[in-house]
Image 1: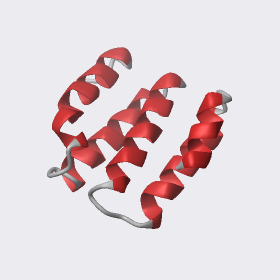
Image 2: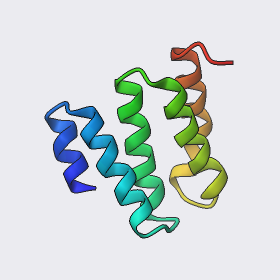
Image 3: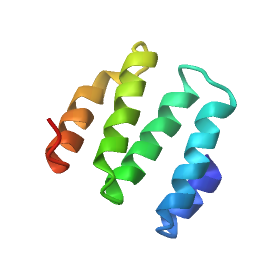
Image 4: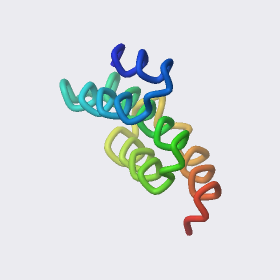
Amino acid sequence: GAIGDCYMEMKKLDEAITYYLKAAEQNVNSFNTPVFLKKAALANEEKKSYPVAVQLYERIKNEFPGSDIAQDMDKYIARAKALGNIE
């Protein structure tokens, strides 16, 4: 995850996304996994890959509904859909 953060700082979005997703899958749990999935989704939004961002946000909402991060997913999903003109 920290490597992904470094790549985000350097604006290397594809590399950041790769490391965030790797971190999310390394030890799946309701604390760390949603954090890294959200970071991957935000990076996808930055590169205008809105459908992928929506998929990641929906994964957080559906797979980790009890996590603190999941509580705000509806607004993130709505924003990504609006930005990407997704119905």
